[in-house]
Length: 145
Image (cartoon, rainbow, N blue to C red):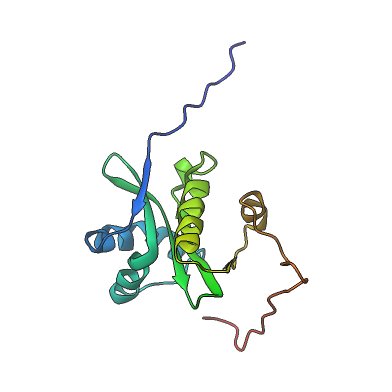
């Protein structure tokens, strides 16, 4: 019985541009609807594109991630999303790598990710603690966002 061959998708990862904002809004909508991403206004999306990256297949956005730089010490990898049909094919890993490369180029010391997909981020080199056993702790002040 022949085994199924899964071809690696053809895609590129590039810095997000202001002209991507409308398509990006449409791209993230299903992730917002199922509670995987927070809703974003057009202005918020525009801000995320400053240090964001899109994965493109053909002329379609299939993934997005942004790096929010808080200081020379800390940045956050935010809004990582990959279209369902492209998950597990290296798109997310390439987006994370682009964000980490941006952090390194900006001489940022640490990058954090707040996620419900901890295994994915661990495969990308993230861990729960940093040297010296630093940990992020959170307190939720209300039931919903």
